[in-house]
Length: 262
Image (cartoon, rainbow, N blue to C red; front, side):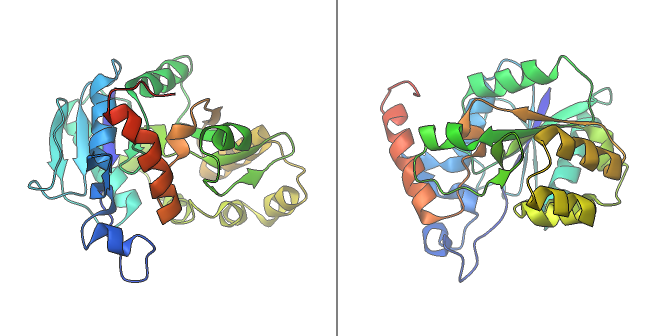
């Protein structure tokens, strides 16, 4: 499967990472001696199930190295458009491709093993969209104090991951509610409101299971989907705030020095 890495996004004045970024894309903030997106690209290089990588959002002179980099595309101004142009590039290079793996450039703690686990997991069915979630217990055990945003369902409490698999044609040929859904990606209750006030009400009362929510979203969007409870907290450990950056610097420094990931 081919991968799209979204690496654009420049923190603006007032953003908590503005000083760290120094006017450059967030994905280029240094962690343990390299830009955080370099860690992501190296994980994809090591993943046996990834064939090619399309990088979206950095200028050619900014782009870190990758053995599998097959295309380098400018940012399109929004996450959805970056995903869409990446999906189209995969189809251009490989007209027979059905799926792509979409990876945020700010989850530097992922490894090739984690990427391959996801690809193996999704290979056993043919849903339109596979969305990764991580339980609160898993996240807090691996990254205490990360202070992620969680959604509490009747059966589990989770945060969303930043490495997901989707059918390419959904991005390249369809529109509809995708724009709103992506815009609300960090606001779980706003996402629920998009699919109906009854769902919002049931979610607030904690009457919905995770699978209930997936079924309702799938019907609303006219697709099939599956939520994957991922055992690796790293796929949901993105960098939005300085304390998260500090956590990842501490976690990745030993790996840079040659120690295996925990």
